[in-house]
Image (tube, rainbow, N blue to C red; front, side):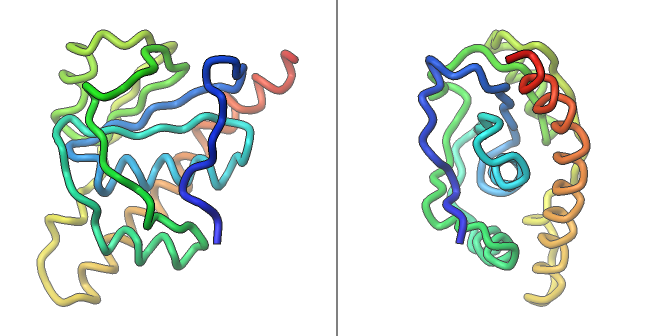
Length: 159
């Protein structure tokens, strides 16, 4: 099982950095950050935060474990807790995130808004809800790999 996050000395790192931001840092942004770390191990710094505080989501643990990522240590964090202020790429994943990112005044090489559904709003049986989480995970997995590949490839060629 891959750990959710590995320690990298970000102050001295020349790795490209990406920040994922959603409403509560309990579903969309931590999934995206974990997928980025899984796709590009040791080649990217991927962080996630929420606009507001949330709590850990059991369905996230379950669907990420299915692909070998242990999210049990994830603790939701909010934008105001960020220590780093500079990211190569900031990706917002909820409607309230772009304004919050603008107000925070982060230095970002690029800022992108991705429209992705919030599976925690899906109602129905356990299987229906899990299916929504899996769809989010799989959609983010493809999108994260496609978007971050040039960022990661570009950095390794310049060293």
